[in-house]
Image (cartoon, rainbow over all chains, first blue to last red; front, side):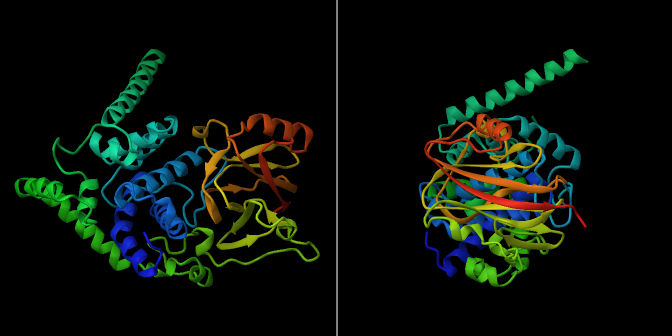
Length: 167
Length: 245
């Protein structure tokens, strides 16, 4: 990849819409999603070497946006606060996606998951990707993706059983 | 977790995105197009994504302006978040250095890794140097510069306690997190300054190894001095926190 303005502009126009769509769906906030997309592409412009060319640019952007969104979701659980101009709380996306309640549940689930389970959960349950597609983004085997999904399901099941016992 | 809404065998948004980007191999593209011929659901989804993409591109700026040098000169219209504070490079940066105090950056050795700070106060965003005055409620965002990939941590020490600000989540296992080489690279979090008045010392640890941070934090809080850390370069900044007027 080169860093010329023309090629970067083309790259941005090809990939920014999908990046923004995903960030909106994950974060539930247009402002936060815009920041994530801007930061991801600015970082890529400044350090193009981070894209090694071993996968498609779509997989690279998916991965970068997922990391950035997960960081924001996790930071929201600490005393650290995200830089936001307008909203102090998450606002449901106007586009097709999750309701505010679904978003809150999703964020709680993602915060509880260690890496790389958080990423895998996003790809499977938010993006609804196939095991093969997730494996390509993560750069691992389909079997490994299956194992990771089993771990996520096991944790969810254990949590459900714990809740049932407490009730 | 949630159940899937996309029927088995139907095309994911990811595949549509790769198709749009021209990244699908010939065989994969043929398979996808064959599926589209027979699946009304996927045709509708593909059309919806195209409309969404087109609508976004109409609103999008000419992002040749993402060149950092140009972005620093003007707060260019951004993708969607007009008025939103963006990464440091996209903001109008106002250097605030109290008179009579030498910016710490001038004291550092050349080539040493260093931290930077950008403060958001209300609608204003400005870069600050070590020794600057800050207020409760200010949001501080950090940048770093390092010639090589290192393991980075940022700790803060005020009159009350020491805290690890970065990494910001448990996923890092309480250890310094590897970062790439970069110049003035913005970190994806900010710290809201609390009402504890006085100096807040900020330590950027650039280490060869992912050092465990809790022992460092505990000793910093107890001794009020950062312990010696083998294999780490340390950059120290100070913010003088004032009560909100």
